[in-house]
Image 1: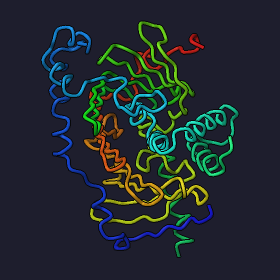
Image 2: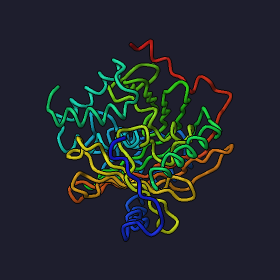
Image 3: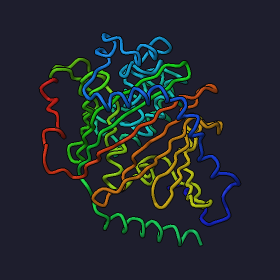
Image 4: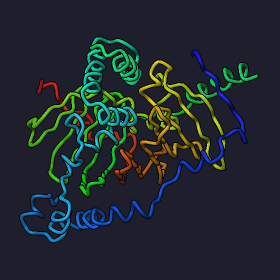
Length: 146
Length: 227
């Protein structure tokens, strides 16, 4: 493990590192207000689908829809590789996050890197997909060979 | 001094891991709310199932439409009324999902110890233990560092940086619930920062069940028939 160096101990932290791990919870709560209302409605009306609510002219969906539009499956504007955002964040964890970021930065190359990674995994190269992905990203993006 | 301490620490962590209980299954009601900078927003709800041995992540969505999403191997299947609506190639990441990491007691370091990232510093600040992970040198022009914060031996926050050191994503794992001795986050808050704009994603897990001995069919979807 070249370059493996760990500094351990209290008081050696860069000042304010802990502050990085904070966010404005109230602001996010405010951003989610309409979705919270929709969530509460669904709790009282289990099994209701978006199309049912739309066809019934449910004011909750209509009001949100007029302003923004709700689409739980296509959701974000920058859907990556045809995979919904919640899958990337919730299912694919940190690797997915890196993929989303890198696709946003350089779509073509990163897509190729991802598929290179998949091919690598099918061939049984490496011990973990994440290691392959990191290697693929570094090697492929850096070397530009596919 | 560190050259002596580090192997001992690794040994202790490994020993602790070896004796810690391993779990195999988790299921939970999930809700994912997303708000993008453009005003777009979405809500997805349903129940998710994961079996560590079978390595399929199965989302049974109830909203916005009843559908099943299956992440199996390198394919993500979208299934409606028993028929495949779409299939998308994706990296096989079951091993790095929050479900797998929690069941295998590796959530605390976010699974980074299984990657090419290496821990550079470990520091304590208040009630947080913060580990900074660096990408391999040859990838440092493309990948940034990742900082992981743990509180009470539970993963609390993860911050992703770009190669220039700018924060691009924050994740917070909160509202931990202990079910059958396993600690699992009830809420994950994600803030994605891109070009100065922020996208928010809040995922909640409720009615979490660990190592369910029934409903075997919920944990495995026979996608082989779709190939």
